[in-house]
Image 1 (tube, helix red, strand yellow):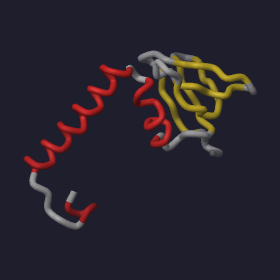
Image 2 (cartoon, one colour; image 1 turned 90 degrees about the vertical axis):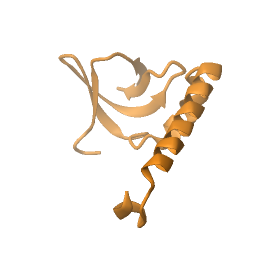
Image 3 (cartoon, one colour; image 1 turned 30 degrees about the horizontal axis):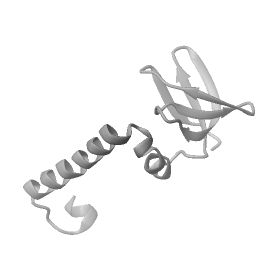
Image 4 (cartoon, one colour; image 1 turned 135 degrees about the horizontal axis):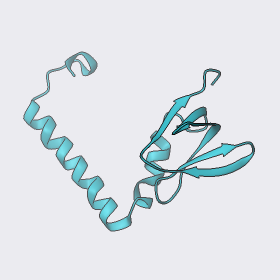
Length: 98
């Protein structure tokens, strides 16, 4: 952290700040559901609008990241059609040419 921001950080202060931030997110999620975090997630997602390769088990899907839906499923543009993907066995990678 010191290298990144140029100063020492008190670990106790850092943990307290992280805990407060996490509590804010958990409160928003409890009150609004995932939709309360959706816009912030999409604004921060580095692969938004980029070409990706999604591995879903043995299946490989090429598409462009459109964002996420109200339940948190990944929205991809695949062959001109918007599709949603969710599940524990998904792996997302940038395509080599993106």
